[in-house]
Image 1 (cartoon, rainbow, N blue to C red):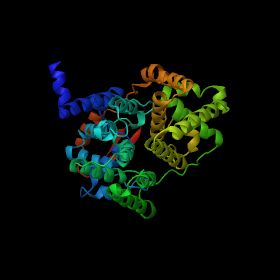
Image 2: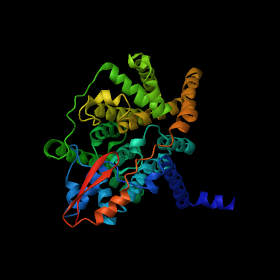
Image 3: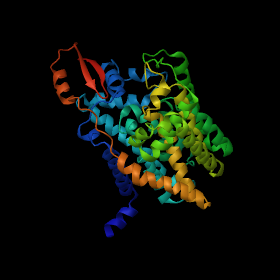
Image 4: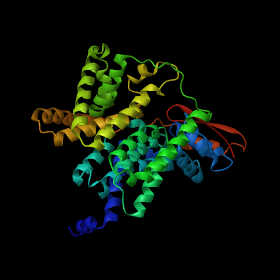
Length: 422
């Protein structure tokens, strides 16, 4: 008991223990990210290979991908190159895990005490974020760190201003990094303007300045810088039924029951003809609409932000190079696109359960959350291991290659990474 009292009083030790607990939660979902780390997709093809082949460390930071800068991934690539190719995948994954738990830790801080006064409710929200189902694609890999940063950017926008210079420097640095990592600044800036306008705008001038600068940089990149990673030219395949299949299956149902159950549901005839997805979709939108009507401004803005990002993803997804994009997405691929709307959906259900005064709503939402806890979590907590491409053996072969010769690495998921030996 004496030890527990000391831990409770020591805020640094308490922070370390919570961070360690959150990290263990992340790792427990796919243990091989630390026991047998491998490059994942763009982690090797872009972030490491371009850092490895650059003449100067800063060169890759000037190269956009898919039309925008991805600075956080470039930072990871730089760190990986510094420790060498043998240790780089582990460094990438640890770096990704740190950014994955950062929004949860940030939300637990006392700075959010005015927005969500009860610590246990903030802790539940953090657990819901780390436990979100159907997130295998963005779990502990460098390529998808930008999605975690997008959430952190939103939290920094709505958090009350701190009097401590250390917190202010943290906010500025992470806001700048997030703004230059992916296209999310295009959706965050309008949200920020609304929030700052509704509050005392002059209190948020520093945040607004950073958001505006990064917005302009990313806009310039999108409009004027030619990059070597063009977006897919496959047809969109948009349709009314496909929209509801994606919204219902990949956002509403997947967040509650997990990926495997969604695969079983979409095999049903009523799903194929559109009856079930439209019914589920209308019900889900009604629940979100009710929460949006009743909740405080911060939750309203998060719902808007999450579904703006979702709408942007649906308008220009990257899930196929040949097949119609929405047709492919109805089968589950594109998990990163469902992260923010899925989180907004689950947080909305939690808010409704604890705040609604209508018994039938509490009962309905309670049943949904019980499905998440007792069906979804046990079945979908552990993600399937990556295929073993014998990375250590490839490293050994690469070391025997002559300087100037090129070696092809086979990496997850069935991608090729080419390195010219230096």
